[in-house]
Length: 317
Image: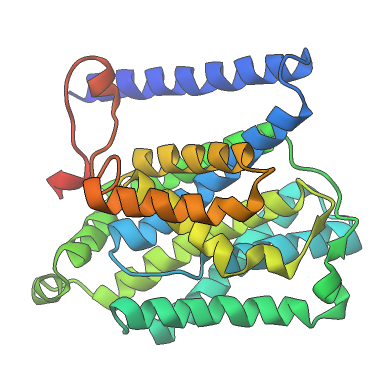
């Protein structure tokens, strides 16, 4: 049994490396041009955002819509470190992620006793507070934006940080901590009755989700020369929420598919920005009518299915 698990992990590792190498070669030979390279990097960043939000909304069952605010903390913190202090991207990325994680902890402690819509409004308010802070701070450019950020994000950075995000969150969900989070999602009162410290696990999951949102923000900031507070407003949180709902709340592979689909949709509608939100809204209405659980629901696409055997991750909890 253990040997089969090792064999599957090895096959997944080989597939990850081969995919990276193929894309890298295609980029270096010019087959994939700058426009498509940019969208591939954005795809990796969006996958990080969707998977980290799904940990909070899908696996923990808490309604958070302030993910863009946490992303902005990582983006601005890392940009300050590379712009003013000439730090390498690795240091800026880690510090940016830790800063977002601290911000997530600060918002989680007083608000996670709230439930449902009340928690959603609280996280939305927190995201707006962060946005207004950067909007009025001249050190980072205020409303004009933070210009001159070094372009350090590459396909290699985006891809392997994305893989790390997925691996860490997948292992967290499969651990006893993750099972406790899923138990809270299924029935919080019953989980408390079984001795699970619900507040502790909520704060833990929220902090981990914030960490990877901050890492995504750091990669995002260093993929462009400038960032502005308006890029991290409610509509950005809505974008991330759409990826999670589209793929399925409670499915990592669903989040990946949702993030890829929304990134491609954004790229296709780049010349029709006014219609983007209309199409998003129609997409969500259709999804709620015909498949309210999202494309994957709580089901994971596993290597067993590739080999012809079916497996379910979330349902087993």
